[in-house]
Image (cartoon, rainbow, N blue to C red; front, side):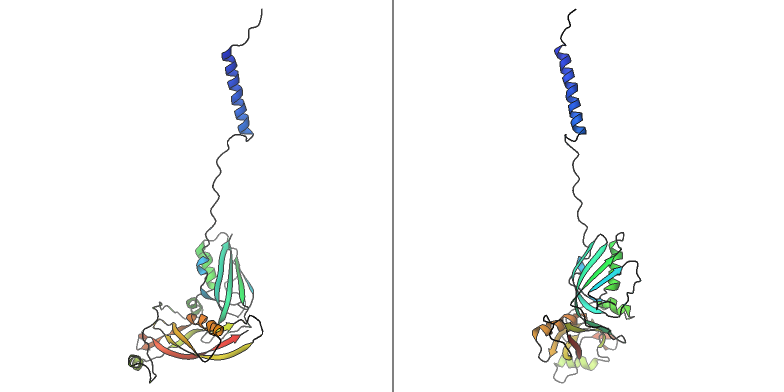
Length: 277
């Protein structure tokens, strides 16, 4: 008996089955449309960026060009040299903090004279071992190594908690040629300003030819908030030297003048040690 050709409907079914097989094979081989790709992860926020531009004090190893702080080490690093610095850059990547610091001067507090060799122009500070730590734990450790002026005083047992109130409009004075209002304020003073923290500035000679150390006289106002205002250098200095001196003066802290228990702004005159390396 002669064989009959398959009907058109059967051929369509077979073609349909074959077409499904081809599509499945293409998907298996990755030729078909794949799963949508996830968007790239956003970079971690650099929560240390707020330190940039701040004036702080690098403790213990400020006479080193590179300082490494490991989480596993004791809180107090070996060394005796502290330096006032400006934070130029601050980033944290994969639990490692990198800060570039410019040295500004040598800090002092009562009964703790500085113990430093000549300071390098810049210091690279690195902190490691904080991959699993939250930001507050990292910044807490950084603030031990690189405290604010208030934190530096606290490390030596002196609490300074006066909030900044801005430049005073008038200040107590004992000078006979001072305005009447300031002389009246001066007659009320029972205790004049007393230094708690001061910073002797350094200037890094770009040509490394000048080496000098000497005293510089200045006048300023000490606010009721224990901070210096309107510093004025007495004598003639090059403008870059004046700028180096003025950069450190906002870091000074005082017990302000008092009229009994009331804090008063007052005129202040003193000297500082200026070093050129």
